[in-house]
Length: 327
Ligand code: KG4
Ligand code: ZN
Image (cartoon, rainbow, N blue to C red; front, side, top):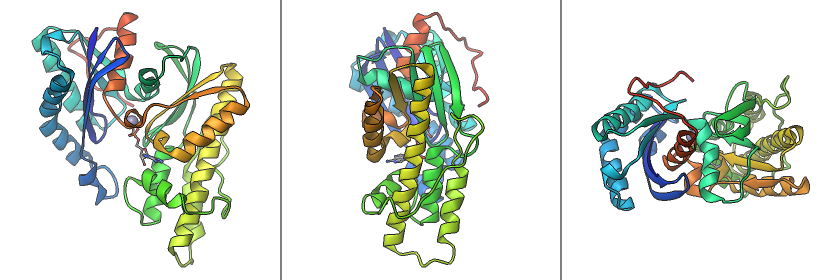
């Protein structure tokens, strides 16, 4: 079964073709990120305009790369939430028109869930139930996945997402946007033990709070002369504290749910220090830790198509009344 996936929740326009929820035939992503960097964040109006202009071309490119004709598509899957309304609308309108003209079924997908599904595209030995951590620019959540249609959120951020905190700290340091890769680069030369930052405590131990640590960075810099060494130490210390809290809570969730497999997804998983520390921390408890390949960490449509295949097999269906859903 060939599923066409469409992802347009933020600044990317992704179209992918995936066979049987596993084999990625094509995964094309056009990003308008460069256009946003001078504003220090994604400008929704620019993002949706670029998506409108690029989606038909990205679709044609995906068909070409996969060597698939439109009639061979069995299901049209698309992100319906969460995301920027204008951006989601572009993907939804394109998907509906395609499904209608080809006479194919349509299925809306939750972007956050698709992030952990990216692991199933890369690894064969994942068994459910599992615990998943999704750590991106918009979300930081822990899920208990009994089955693809039985996903329970057991922890979530009470304020900023982890990626958002990376972006904000990078902005404070004048490093640029998006902040994650820039903080990681600065951190490589910094002393992670220089400053002790901590994330705020939360009532539910599996919830997160990242806004306090961002403010702590801001206060730490007050009345200080900012030089490169200070930026590097600060980036390393902030990165370390953020990763440590992600690990602590994810492993606690595994213990509470008595599972031995932890899936991690979302843009922040591109961080190599995070990957190394997660592997080491999980190994001590006999937990296997899974990450998607680098190109599947960031927003893409292959993960949307993959999850849609699993849900469609279980009977999930949408129709042309499908619309974007509130976050
Ligand atoms: O999943 P994603 O592509 O988009 C959302 O769904 O939000 O994640 C983007 C986020 C941004 O906040 C970005 O700064 C962060 O992922 N990110 C990183 C790294 N690469 C991207 N954070 C830390 N280290 C990285 N290497
Ligand atoms: Zn995402």
